[in-house]
Length: 309
Ligand code: RIB
Ligand code: CA
Image 1 (cartoon, rainbow, N blue to C red):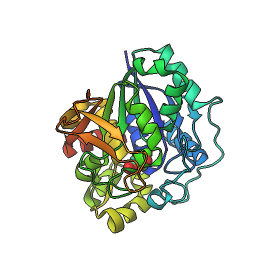
Image 2 (image 1 turned 180 degrees about the horizontal axis):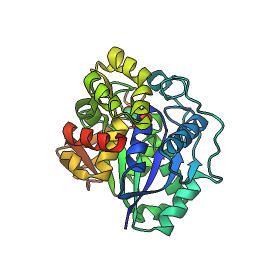
Image 3 (image 1 turned 90 degrees about the vertical axis):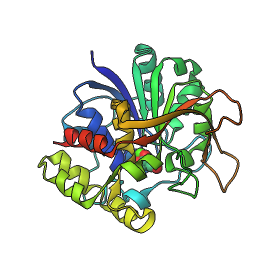
């Protein structure tokens, strides 16, 4: 019996590679995708997801979800991934049709239909998940586990000094999810920055695999690679969503994890979207999330190559 995944994504250049890792894995049945505004406006995220599924020759329901955060204006990351989110390399990313219906409604439906069996993987802001929880709080107990690409356990942010982008876009949504009782596992941008950087040498190795998926996965990181060189000072490009997906598929990618009490900053402008982690337990609150704090670059790269070869 294949494992059932539902993926919520703001499909841009790293999300697309994470999608390929799930689409191509023999043990994973991707039951559906819900798209959320984040890296790019909603409709672009929908088109990017549809294109990626077509490239992999797979079909599954792909639904549009929230076009903006719960209560804030949308801030995109087109400066990181490109205007189209896919490196602005001229891919034909328009004209495809998503499945009819709301991603939020369809997520709720799927979680009840497969209660206890769906592994939910979130690769973007948590707006859709929060909306689903507001609509039907009982879904928190139907989710087998929820793996979140988000936050930073070392508190070194990528969109502000202390906030990771997915959490920064919709902090109110993070607050709702953290208080929902859902089984949560976080893979933060600290893990991407330290264990999921693909060097130029590794990019060349991936290209040498010779498949469309492999060249696509490198080509669409063109703008991200520039951002990494100029802003985050990484040697190549980092793949936060793919290493979170790798962990979702095989937790042995993580070499260290902790069970901590997490809380989201929604009031301050300076620390908006910071996910504060009680590493010493000083608040004596019940831990509400597992946080990956170390991972294996080698294991991640091996899984990435398996998906792209
Ligand atoms: O901070 C990294 C996250 O923000 C990734 O999910 C990336 O795709 C962007 O959404
Ligand atoms: Ca993403």
